[in-house]
Length: 469
Ligand SMILES: [Zn+2]
Image 1 (tube, rainbow, N blue to C red):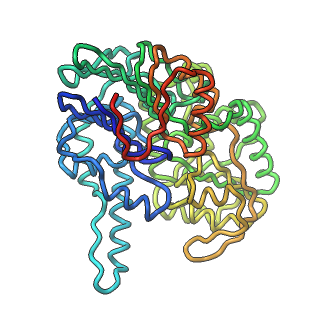
Image 2: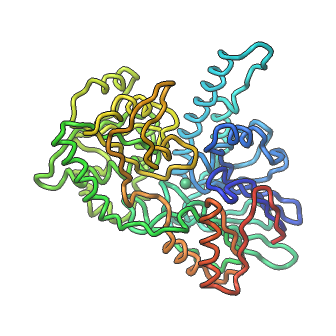
């Protein structure tokens, strides 16, 4: 059989890997959207590299768009099969894909309104209808730990899900393929989470012997700080914000980081005497995703039951937390007086309501821009994080005078130590493909793994590269 890496190959976006058996069965792991540099990403998303009609099954690791965002393109181009995912991934993906379709439609509409003479009309990459059709092809498969053993998807192909601990519903996919009388076990980490993260369970080790592992490597170059630091860090920001009657703007990753932050704030606010400030979630998508979290409390970690008494306290609900509804509510926040925290998408500050909050608040040195997650290259978020002195929003320059800080430990990705630990705890490993990491980081991480496992065959695939396995 062979495997081809069509995305997240020496970068962190567009995850999609295709396994083809000798019998001609084609299994696609993830079908992610390319993000980052606009023109290049647009081209990669439009030139879908796989013949959708030839794909027999899709297994989805989790609902981040860089893993699921091109599923509607696959469906639009003729994929008729199932998309296997955990129930919570399916629920979250529903909102993520709807939101993405909405953006595609709006972008196309905007561009078509500004066409120059002779330019062709632009079709959205996909529409809301495509996204709805995609959802019909989902097949919900529960984690192994919650009672679901192997799922057969072809006579000689089966898989199961372990908890990846990265976001709600995230899974490590383990596939077994029988070919020429022998069975190969191939595992894909998807994105791997951290130990002791709020809400989520720790990543589960795979119980089977694994021949081939596809491992993410996002943070192969660094060690995160412990989660306890985050609480003290947020406490400092809140105290400073109260002192200056100021605002904290949190560019929100609608899925994951937002709910973790709400959880931590709730925990802090439950401490006797802790100063409370209004928290406003100004992101319709983040609000919907938070509702999905409430529905799937059965996959929360055991710590959550200790932090919040199930009889009287829900982890993601508290007095000082409100949700905006219409655009008017969002605009009203411009004149609202601090102290307050506004959590608003998008997380890398490329689009969405957060741009309005940034332009209204970034020039005031008393305000804080709190970055909570990975900022990809070529995004506004990355430039702000890197300390640029001025930024451009809606064709106007703004000086960056607010305090810009990055929460120390809110990353949803395993760090170097945790990645090495996961690889070391994967038994029977013969071949390792390192995916989902920026080039320099992935090369460095490969050297580290090589140092610990001199006999392991380690490959760093390029986009489009095919391997016999
Ligand atoms: Zn992810």
